[in-house]
Length: 149
Image (cartoon, rainbow, N blue to C red; front, side, top):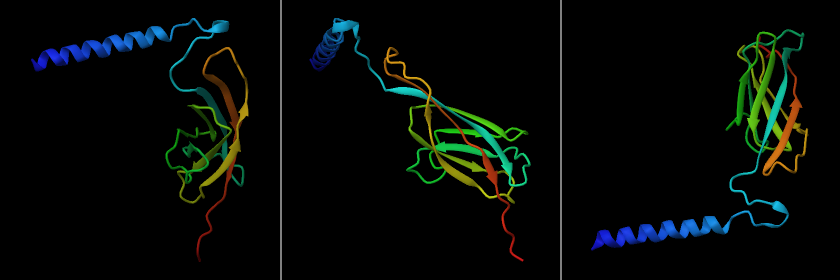
């Protein structure tokens, strides 16, 4: 008897979900269709990491976080610099500001961070929940650590 109740309950839930699905069909005015999910966008941050003397800094880790978090905690994108000191970070999300943190592999150099205003590239209103692209260029000039004598 318990199995029959479980089967009946499962079928009623499936029927209810089917009715909800049909109730959200595209009979909206102006051809608008309902959407499910999360608002998205993309961002790109690029730049170069050098020392104060202008030398390229290879293998530095560059992290992107939201500004409210401590530097580099819970990054939403991570990259390493190339031999030329250049880096590119790509990620999902649409942000007005992001914190970019640079952590050099060379322990003689100090880490650095900055909060950057993102430049919004496009505003495609016909693309549903996609919020377009944001980009910024962030260059770092890392300082040498002062050694105690």
